[in-house]
Image (tube, rainbow, N blue to C red; front, side):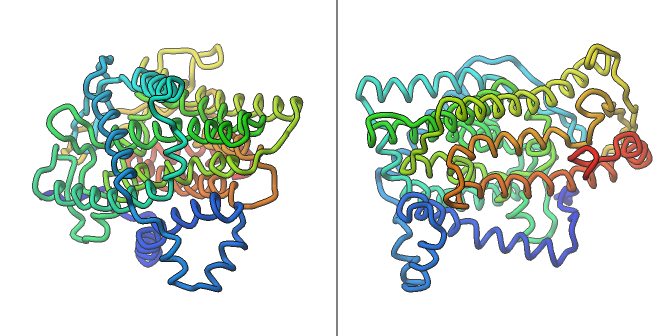
Length: 437
């Protein structure tokens, strides 16, 4: 079996192992504590801390919900529905980027159709009183608990599959169980020929659940109070705009680090199956029981600012995608783009060429698109105002995640492109924030 080239670490070995073991052990209980604090402790970290200080480990065990039959049923029905849409809905054939071993994955781009069908189906089930989404909210702790354990088992399946039945030559072991389990064995794992596992975990389960839960929280607040607060409307609208943007651009996402470079392990797959439905949706979870009256003017200001940030984030990705699609023969901000032609060698020894864009948004910083993404997260959280810190955890987490991802991406590109990357960094000196960092 081939070695796994993507397991080279960008931090010191000690820090890398500490980070992996910390995330493996701390993320599951954090999800439960986040849910408990938002739903049962008034969003107050101090209240949860005092409870744990008073009751200790047994108190934590007592608040951890046990997975129930209804939780497993909701997860199974939702997962099966999304898997069926991924396989059965028609979509355009899209090729991903050439992998390190020279493979080019092929996808069916039907994400926007699956997103539309999912939301229409979910809202229709509520409207016609077939299924009440508040059931999902009422059993949320049990659902998260089931997802935590079920997704860990799924990651074990991915580890075993990577050893005994890899889907392509873009797979292999680092020789270390912890690294292989955490970072993954396969770059493009599939079940059969057409069911792409990372498209399912990242897009159709994880990102889709974000939209489904945003709607759920809105409906729950409506059924509790007989109305939806303007703060919840702003939060839900901005999150739905962001997720809509994601599925509109889904084929572009398949060219990003998540899909084209990070393997299918705990980091990506458990994160998308558990962390996205819990942490990413947490501002809305908080607002269910903490409606804030912003007033029309402030609500509109926040909404417009958030939509603008989401648009800029989208336009950054659109510019780069169009530049790649046309091989640089396009216009960026009305002019022919400036670029660097970089050659590199694949692991199989082939020489390839890539174009590095240095125009438009991409002349401001090498990862400028992270700035509007972080700001968008702030704007859909700020309707909660500042009574508690916890609703802002996602903004803090996202900032750390994207800054770390920028470092990993820079290190990978430096290794891949060599002198061309050095030239690129000379032309675009800032990593994320123009003029600052």
